Image (cartoon, rainbow, N blue to C red):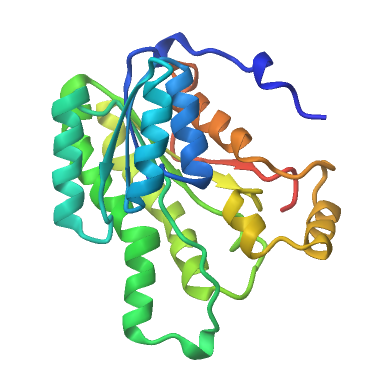
Length: 258
């Protein structure tokens, strides 16, 4: 069985580091926010889900964590820029950016309209570039940083049922590789974390069935369902100084299913 969370590593380089997470109110993003808060980082997160975001921030603040929630619809790039500026004013410029926000809503290729296509790209890809653009000047001034983009194993596995989502997630890898080259001279590292089918509350409510879960476990090398905490742990490693020479690469957290 996977290790107990009490056995997880602590990264001294993340203590008091300014961290920005997009889509942090639920799912994998929520676990990432909790993980950085547990490291003593100054964590800000953006999300359009105001109720869940405010509740998560309040719960973590009650433990003494330095956490700030900034409501934001990331499809609105001007709003994204304002939110990044607001959290930089409160916590300092981000040393770590985790581009997590995405929604894997199912759709039929036959039903996709140009408007739907553009909205899905705005939801799953476009904001990642503009978040990088917004935080990079602060990282350059600080002498370095770490940017972590969340990909997906869905397109690697030729997954069907959400073609615009898989298109966006495939493009994340091109964004990572290109920006790693452009920002590398400033000691800014850019990597992609590639989760497998992760058992978030949303996935379990909408799509997990006993039959689908059995098929997923049969495809994995490891026999356990993938929990969000393990995706978050990879994000911590890539944010920390322990990964100082890691950039432009994919880090798989999918239990060996590809």
